[in-house]
Structure formats: structure tokens, C-alpha cells
Image (cartoon, rainbow, N blue to C red; front, side, top):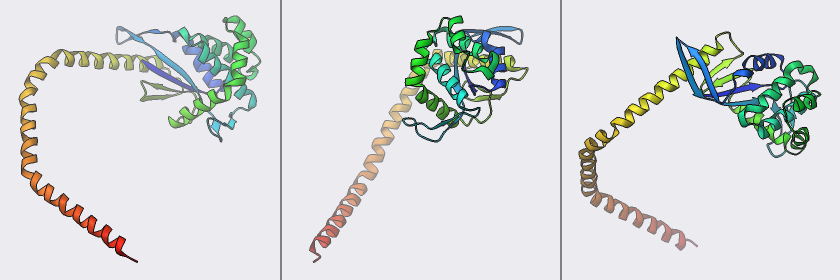
Length: 242
């Protein structure tokens, strides 16, 4: 299951949505749907939404909620970069979002609470933070995200906000993926028989190819010879001009 969440660093609705789903963000994702327990391997990612009037190398960033939001986004994306294992950075972001008006002031407290190295985050934010935010803004823009929070499931199912049936939407994607994998497995099991039956077809295609070559080869050769001669005559004419 691939789940992408698009947010702004100080967006209150984004904070509320992350608060609701944070505890479910685990590598092994489980949900109940239509009387069944479904399991999936989760690939989750957070992307920031904002404006970049510069380039990736030389960004000119504008966060919707002001400069303090931009600082918070730099720190949070650095947390994503350095503490992606088991989604440790999600706990840090959830802590930061407890009161979005205090971002980024809560960073030391939240880093200490969840065992993140604050010095590492600050150094990353100062050295690479702008490029991380620029890349995130660019990807969100490329995906056509204009409203936050927005979720995209399996790269195609877009959900704006956090509706009450969000869990069902996620579970339905897991069920669809499981069905697709089962169909692929069934097709793979039948593949050897298909390979045997395809052999005559391959031989027929080879025969048609050679027949085509024999039938059209001579006229094609004559046509190409005439074209080369015409091009040679044009070159000679150009060279002969004073």
C-alpha cells in the first residue's frame, strides 16, 4: 500500500488529520474491511505544499503561513530524511502539530521526547533544508495538489481532507491490490502453457517477415538507389554554383 500525505507545516487541518492516523502508520498495516482482516506493507510519505519562485538549486521559497512555517518544514523534512526507519519522524511531527502556532519552537521538546538528535536536525535544516523543501514543493505541484491535507493512495486514488470513511477507502485499496496480485500469480502459473502455444505463432511471424522482405526488398532497394542518386545530383549542383 502506497500512501502519500500532502500538508503545510502550520495547517491546522493537516495537524488534526495526522493526529488521527499517526498511530496507524506502521510498516505492517492492518485494517478490517467487509468482515475480513487485511494486511499490507505500507509505504508512507509526507510532502509539503508551498511556492517556489526560484529553482531547486537556488530556491526562493514562500510558505503559505509565513517564515516560521518554512523553518518548521525544513526541520520536519530533515526528520523525515534521517529518521524514516519505522516512521520515527511521524511521532516527531505529531508532537510538533500539537499546537501549530508554536512551530518551530516546539522542536527541542519534541526531539528530546522521541529520541531525535536536535543538533543533527538543525544542521540539516541549515545546510540542506531549503533543497528538501524545494523538492517537496516541486513534487506536490507536479502532482497537482492545491488543497491540504490531501491523501493519494497507490498513486491514483486522491482523497481531499480526512473523511469519516477514510479507513474504508484505505482498506478498499488494499483489497484491490491483493486481488490484482492474485490475478498476476494465476497468470504466472499459466505462463508455461502459453509459451508452448506461442511457438507456432512466432514461426509464422518469422515467415511473414521474410516474405515481406522478399516481396518488397527489390523495389525498396531500387527506390533508395534513386533517392541517393538524386541527392548526389543536388550536391553536385550546389558545388557547381559560383
